[in-house]
Amino acid sequence: MSLTLIDISHLLVTRGKEQYGGEAVSQLEHALQCAHLAELAGETPQTVAAALLHDIGHLLAPECRAADNAGRDGLHQYVALPFLRALLPPAVLEPVRLHVDAKRYLCAMENGYWEALSPASKHSLELQGGAYSVEQAVQFVSQPFAHEAIRLRRYDDAAKVVGRATPAFEHFMHMLATVTARHALAKMPAAVSA
Ligand SMILES: [Fe+2]
Ligand SMILES: [Fe+2]
Image (cartoon, rainbow, N blue to C red):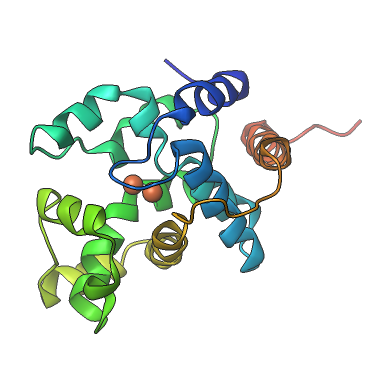
């Protein structure tokens, strides 16, 4: 099954009201703050879209959070991918897929990163396999879109501030529509000129 833009919009405004893991913001506030931080940093529309959608697996599959609550990893970074593959390019899907691995990478490679994580994020890290070894970190960072995923991770970590102002939801849905339209056009056979 493929999601449409209307499906995504509906998910974000309905299930997005749910709390974001153990944090003090909702899923929708977290998504908007993450996308806003990416936009402020000058990221491409594709990376901003990845920031907006990176946790949508939690909304598609509430059993993800149930798994987390039961002490298991719900693998939310993978859940959304089959639903989004027809709609969005790898430049969006890959940072979404890699955003948990990027946390494991940063914990291994950056002094002070783990210490600065929120308690909820430290807890989920353990469920997700903990910090990478140096060898795993090197392997991770050699993948396409690993650097986008690492930057997304930093926006993700900072997107948990109660009451932070962001552009409206419609602003990011308009941007997402542009990204999907460009992707659809890129998939079409080149027009044959007369
Ligand atoms: Fe996540
Ligand atoms: Fe997140």
